[in-house]
Length: 221
Image (cartoon, helix red, strand yellow):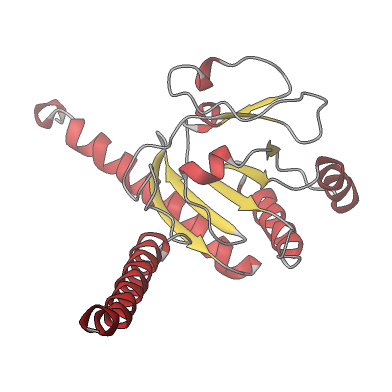
């Protein structure tokens, strides 16, 4: 009789333990992924050098996934390839976007292209589409007349490196490819333009300071 009385207790205890384990696992996973939409939590954070990558230009016929090998990406050659390393000679603004579940992102790329047209003489601009249907991307580029080069991140490897979790995601790099700032969410031409001007002005001030500090104090007079 005693054994029969213990069995229900032991069974309920086991169920309770299993339930607690499941809850703990869920909490751990939630904590690990709660920052999935935050730029800078992945391999590249604010103040870090941009992770090299090469992707096919969306409008090209080049087929393939992104090359994110640090030792190879900047050496990939071809007129149909977009390499981030080619843009390190001046400030750079990069836009990550997709249309799946984020149709408003198309309008945001219109804004990005307009701002790029205004400041392309002083900064570089690149756009990276993430995992959309490529024919659809080509159609959008053609119909909207975007001039900014659009790379195609077919497997999402590049967006994973930069931990892109929202559309659009704008990244602002100083000359040399150092990540200065990141913004997620909708903007307008005035706001984005101000951010680009700030990036350019900051670079100009840094250059002036370097020139001043490097000057020979005894050369004057």
